[in-house]
Length: 131
Image (cartoon, rainbow, N blue to C red; front, side):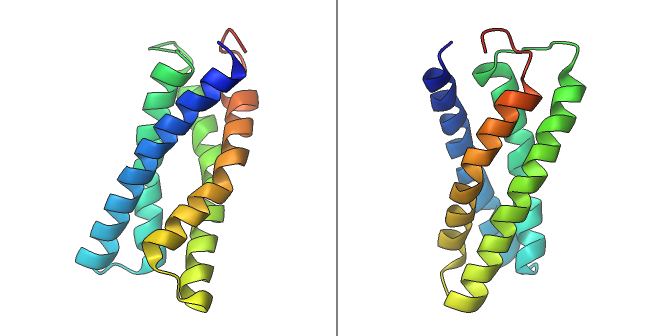
């Protein structure tokens, strides 16, 4: 599979993750009134699990391969860096610039997407066949 095709799949999965993340963030922050950073952390955690399963099965075609736990741990570590970028961006934009929280969240996700793809391609799924 070409790098562009794989990137396209990664972005589709990421788009689904953004929808899940924003819906969960809205529910946790607006409806349950959790603190913004807590709400963001929970929302990102849900999106990480969703995105791992979809990327593992579809983007990188791993199915139920025996190394799923290793890949999940690596994906989670890469995602933690994305979580830090997303949450820091969200907090800063909301706190200092009064950007609406869902807009700030999307900006943060956008900032972390490129580094997440490169790290996952070269580390998490480095042995996924048609690199």
